[in-house]
Image (cartoon, rainbow, N blue to C red):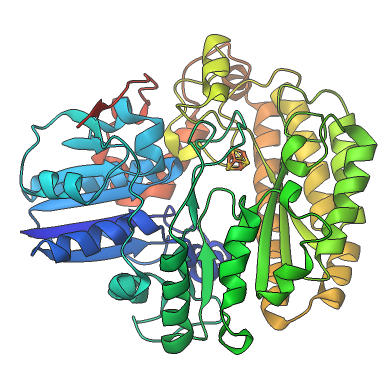
Length: 507
Ligand code: SF4
């Protein structure tokens, strides 16, 4: 069989800054499961064709047209593009399958466009799919996520395709996706992993993969895709430290501040951690446990997190902190003042401020759904920052965007930028700051456009106030512009998502 595997990580770029961002950063976000599926298909004797689309180039030309089966994977914001592509491959006669985060969030919607929707999978399930064991129109899952991932060496053809230029040359950002664990012990209500049991994967496999990379691709960076890295800190770090210092690979990861206690942080530099992302989310006491600050909130939480992150900067060259603004616990001016205080006090970390998005399968979705606060006719193309796809509990849309503009000014202030560039530890981090600051300027322009519409266009305002379900012309036109010719493949009725939540059939 001729099997295609396509991971779509972004929508087509709309400007040179987006193109730059996607080429430098998004290209490196390729996930592990599509690569594993490609390897398994090859091992099962099929011809596999693997590609990633990161918002640059023509997504239709990435795979051959004469395929028997095509596996797609995407995040929710890119789903409309993937729906269009699936229609094309169906027309060419392929059996189409979707998995990944969007499929897990909104399986009922995916069933409108794909022959099969898959939650968790393993090699056996992929074998059954490719050999035609399943009828069209089902949502299926293996009993558990797979734990026996192909080795880095086995995935190398896919890694070269995804992360290298022209499948040959690494850039300073070239990264190799790996995992040391699945699931997470925390239960953040907005996160798809809120109820995934935590389990550590094989230490031997980790060690072998790191040795292989050190010998063959020493100039790449390992990107650990664990939802929450090194929860079993010693177990993972003992493996990292077992590699001789001269052969250690640089790596980036996402983790909770709670595990990075003072006695551990020196081990980050020792093991060559060059980038880290910490999820803090809120300055109220929700999510405080994972910041290691149970029940702490307000100014005390800001100051303690800031101090902690600044200490970590001694050991990690690039840091970002993720925050959410607009949670049900946010009210009035205080969250903005707290965020601004944190941003100003913590030049060592880039603050990524997100809008709460109700992804299906999460408690946050259930709450917004029960309160009837989801803007139901908003297409999935807008399920990402800076679009508001819900009605917030304590802010109307005008107030909310005014506050986002205030925060954006704080994030990209010239004074702070000078400090960041001055204290950057290398040119790679300087470049990331530069790209992000340019991106922030684009985002601010977009906030201003939305704010202007909220003030001047009654229909637009009514939509965000929940008084009208008619999708405003602005979003209709934006949808067409972003998706280009793919917009025609998904009819206006199909652009309205099905938010119904269904359970998979375990096979
Ligand atoms: S700590 Fe991170 S991975 Fe774990 S549930 Fe919270 S957001 Fe998700």
